[in-house]
Length: 110
Image (cartoon, rainbow, N blue to C red; front, side, top):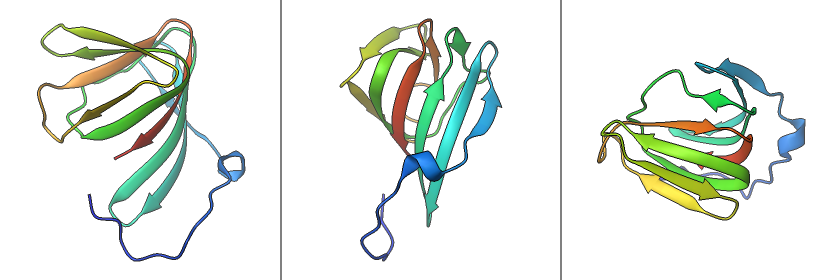
């Protein structure tokens, strides 16, 4: 990841309008900031959210609140709670998808 030249920037996430992204079940709400090729997101998953796709994009993901299950296409699952993160490269170990029964708030850089 290469952060492009930019001045010191502060982001008030509450002022970025969320976009709605329906999952297979539940909904994700993204507040997104794009800087060059970098996408930075504050994401909220509703209770019962299950992603509608397998993702091959690399991410740095931090759970801010709630509980998130990250499932790899090989069937393995990892549960993350507030304060935990995962890092995966583009087309890394395996495609992955997220789910939560309780809801979750995340900070994601990709």
